[in-house]
Length: 261
Length: 277
Image (cartoon, rainbow over all chains, first blue to last red):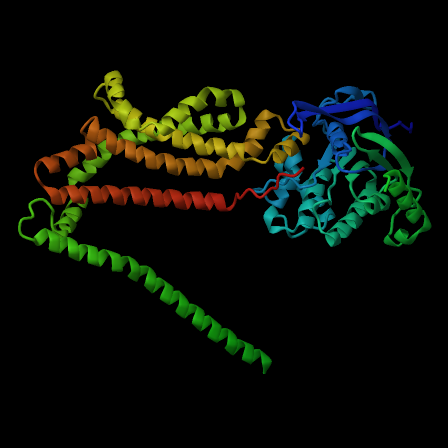
């Protein structure tokens, strides 16, 4: 069997500016959100984007998702330019973005429905993923009957149901309390390590980034640039006792340093 | 034993809960009666005073109401009046819902329709009735159009609001999963707007009823309007009171049904998605 080189995501010379009314009321102000970003997301790696608020990490992720356009530069999957959302990418949102009137089952099957997958087939897939994220028995529940952590399990299952090659996670645990957050990190890493889809993970949390990632991209703000890229040399599967590991502690310190804090 | 003690405690709790419920029910019957009975008594007394010519007695009002309810005149008027209501309000709903929904989505359409909508909301619609009479003549259509004009802004406004309040995040989510514009409508916008559509149905209907009566009293004396005017001209005030009462009863009944429907649909569709950054 020939080993085919699976493509990652290549980002070249990417810039993005926003315009908004100036804070002092003097006309328009330009925000240089991203400035000539060069980055490669390797196939099957778990990559985190970390940085202060306003460094453009969410904008970068939305561009990878095809939800925002670049002003300059290019994003490519293999040789193909990203011009919009595509079935090989699926996103998990910070505020879950579940359909409030739809059951857990219908929410998880949502992407498949849009892809015109037959009902029996998409519900079978959805049920598998509901089981995988530990929501068995809640298939008929509505989002508002679930806790934040459970809602994000639905969000994660919905993305995984598309069987995407790239999983894009926009601060998925940012809206959760500390305890749910830790539980969800364990859950995510367990699911991710089982089939290693290429993941781009935006976060504010240094520890979370170190615990989950293979590589961490540290961004600086205004203009948004890549300050440093750190390889996390911890073995997989990741376990919580690694938080005491010398490597873990060193990487954490290095990230804080790169963030200038 | 501990369990039997808990049972006894639970039973006394249950008893006091039932007592409270009975008391509640009693008040719910008693309070309205406490209003109606004195009103009826004062009414009867005022009508029986010497010198009263027009005010019917409460008892004759009640008798006439029952007679009308089981007679042919009232139901004949109802069919005449409400066939125009059905046409006018039906058209307002069928046209108003898509226009309202589309206005919520498309800025350009909003710009075109909004000025007229504002005019329609702030102008007393009664003043355009002579114009309609000139254009459409003494037909059911001119009544239907009055009803339409009364109702349509109140269908459009909630529908527009329903679409405008859909969290942009949900639309972005759907797009990220590959939804096109048609998918957005089918899977997100319309389901999210259903409570607003129900609200438009209820509000529009209330205004359609107003339009129906106003048209029949001021424009074209048919149906209920004709009935009322005839009774009035015959100085049959008990029948006037009874007719008004029955029309009110009918409106209240329909509104009650629509409110229940709205509540039922709305309960399962509370939008509780935060805006997010």
